[in-house]
Amino acid sequence: MARQLDEQIAGRFPVGQRLRVLDVGMGQGTQALRLARAGHQVTGVEQDATMIAVARETLAAEPEGIRSRMRLVQSDGRDTGVHFLPGSFDVVLCHGVLMYVEDPDALLAGLARMLAPGGLLSLLVRNADALAMRPGLAGDWASALTSFDTTAYTNRLGLDVRADRLDALTSTLAGIGAPLHAWYGVRVFTDTAADGAELPADVETLLAAEERAGRTDPYRQVAALLHLCGVRGGGAP
Image (cartoon, rainbow, N blue to C red; front, side, top):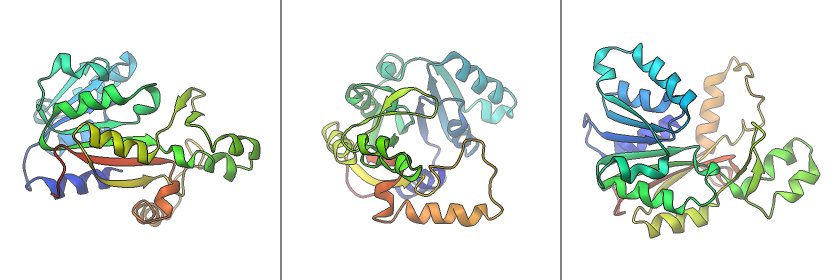
């Protein structure tokens, strides 16, 4: 996931350019902090008080140069227009958020407005076209059958959430002025791994297999998650 994002950034912006990054629904700030360490100016938005407290604690332990490049805002991701001017960012991240939003179109339109021309919108969503894979591979045939014709599912936290279809998001991104530029599959082979499972000794080989599958049809089409990259104004890099 991080490698895919870095690839898109490297292909779109000059080497060494300090980018203005907005991470909406940043959670504990792992991705935001990684980008700040890489030299970018990062603003993280998170609504959950516990999550943003963890992010602040982690950031406090960083060197001053990194702390000065990162700003944390406690807010709903749908309120970006309240805090920021249109076109204020080169890169906008929204990873693992859309599944909690019943109607994401307004959120996505707001995020697209935050992008400067040529800016990159990075989304990580649950793949609605592959919802039957996890229960099917676990031998839960009844749940697999009910997963084919729905976008609703229960996540590992026990929450009832929703997934997105690639074709629907492609249409949405075109409609908000940030057409789909590239997409990848995430967790093609590893979605059924238990939470907290120990990493295998050949983890680098595993990651290489996941990376290859995430870029290759038909494997990426059945990934648990989809990583979509839209570009404000479209066009090739």
